[in-house]
Image (tube, rainbow, N blue to C red):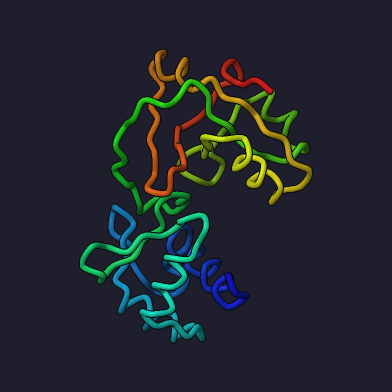
Length: 180
């Protein structure tokens, strides 16, 4: 991904996941924003976007953070929202036996005391493989990967969802379901 595409991806993450009001757009309950309104609001904020650039960022993103509606008129972040105005109705799914969470070693003590909490996001994000979790952990410092007893959690009443980009979501992971 080019530097320009990376910057646009960060901008889209900011407005579509966290602060749409920062540029004066509104998201619906499912997180959708009108692409024309996004382009106009971004221009007022000094960011030059067009439909082709947005489409390129969406399709070339290795993390598949965004999706464009079937009619091509709307865009949304598929997960990772911290804004309370979005409440995507994910379909509950049965997780595999184990899922993984990547974090930095500096957070381990807190995680061992409290479990995995969503922080400012709506859900804890989990990966289906160790490599992806490790890559996520590297963004925050010296990485460590935690193994989650996901199926056991599900059997005990915890709900799991899977976003369009394959990221697994759950509201929290109690300490008793963590292994290293």
